[in-house]
Picture (cartoon, one colour):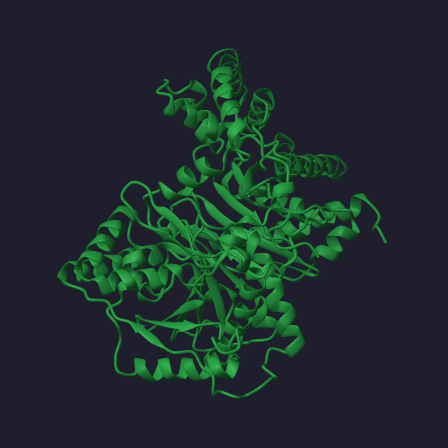
Length: 602
């Protein structure tokens, strides 16, 4: 088996796409949204760009390509994440897994037992990663993926600074040196440093050993709650940067505490809430108690009092699909043990507990109050549902040669057009991890062919015509997604061209000031912000990009589709419950169109 990080240098470079292909892809997405007059105007603007500024900016990017194996990596990290000043609440992604359904249904009093087993599993995976024994991720055809982000899942934190944050990772393989082996437990707004790896055995502590440590932490917390310094991480980035600097000025112990938190493998919260279903769990994962979440950590988990589990991840360090390997590892381990520890019950060797006590003053107390208010405002404004559609899933869809991702996107677009009377510019994450340090590209799934099908469906056109249009839309989506995965999308390239113009002091090219650029989703203006997390055991969630938009994550397993949808309560346009009701109807209607059009593939 190849070592975890051994194939990275063999991956192809992520190069700058051709200017002509990017403009062609962009105009293709414009055609789906624009009327004839708008399209002609944007088409002329694009022609002018190709004749004038475009080649100049392209040449600049090609020069960059000569010295960067991935031309967009640093640009995207800085502009897409680290320079954003909004609170992490709006950027982080949340997740829940099927552990609840398979092994750990809600059960009061199970928090410590399940959390202890989880910490043991995490320690095993982290140690395997350090020893490069985690097999490199591959696609369905066995093609290796970049594992670079596995270096920033653990022991990694985003550090706030004025204007631009810093991403610091303390993780490294054994062959490169040492790295911290502790994690941070947050309980009652207090911080406790514990080791995951035993100094005596160099192996992860066992669940009974972790359980003893966690029970000790709970006992200590009976004396009272902490000051809630974690609430500061809910603030906008410049404010948090100022308060963090002040914390360091107050006491050198504060600085050391921050280093312990920021270098930890992960942060884990022990919470006194009891969510009972996927919707309640996902809502808690996405929002959460402000004094219980260190929102800058690349990987953070939370355990409810009834033993349900959720996670929240800082996005600049890692994309959601990278965590699939860890979720699969957890699932396999839990399947083997039935969700319960069957090994040694010895508790002689346990981790030391070190409480991290911050010295704070009135200014920090003021910041904590503001952080709590920011989180409350976000929580009060977030609407979320996480349904399970169980009438069919991957098996039934593939029986009729339906690409499950395409099916869901078709149904999303049709639902939006039925409710809102117009197409929705749609973002779907496409992975470019088959390239060196690859991350994501935007797949603009609202295509002219899909819009034509949706209009025909809404107009009640004859079923043979609908079936023909549906087949065409399905084929176009599939090709578009594979193109984006193959570095033939348009959004990252347009982003690079726009940024280069700004950096060179040039006037902003008209292609980027044209109203159609934002109207089709440019500059983060996608009405539907979506991601397909595959055929795995975890479901994610993000908030919408726009006030009147939706955020949709979905996974499609053998006989079910599990998804989460978000919207903003202040919107007078969106209606989450109505959207979901219409979407469920649309699932069945589109499925039957496919089913009628072809015989099953047995």
